[in-house]
Image 1 (cartoon, rainbow, N blue to C red):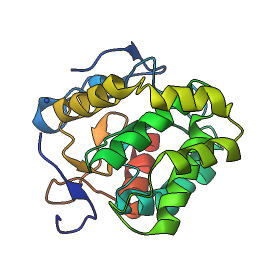
Image 2: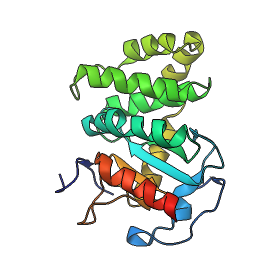
Image 3: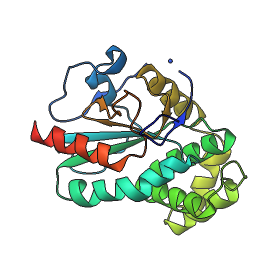
Image 4: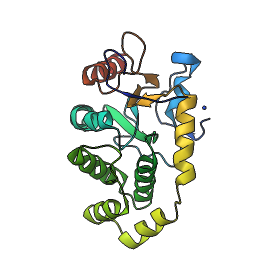
Length: 223
């Protein structure tokens, strides 16, 4: 843990896709990473918000990470209400699944939900379930839960079940992690605002620090 932030640390490895709409900054962040690299959209990214919103927030997180659950409850809710609903911000969530098989399985399940246009509903359901469970690595992120949540959010459960059974998106989830590491992500949650990582005074990821993330959004809007 880094002073001033609440994160999970990991170790550290490209990025492709289509450029997000709007003006994409070309300045460099930590480690010489170009903001434009962070803001490239792959065909698996799902935007929340107006495509032409001036500020783009990219969150890297793990469904099993307790601090990511805290970010979902305390920070993402505010971003949605105060910035996304008002057309100021668009947001992308990317899985940085590193806490073991349950994290990977949950990330793959969320990818399967994308196929039916229900990613954000499924994303929310996963975090709500994991926050209610309150434990890490206890086996609750399993097919039984995934199927229940699929039914709850209105997915075609037969298609969804087939998708997760086939591990259709295992390589996609793995690539998102390696791409994130190439961008300097080594902890969860990690948030980028217009391609710049939100960091503490000591340079570490801001983690679940709501104040720092909202300040970064406000600063980007003012520019």
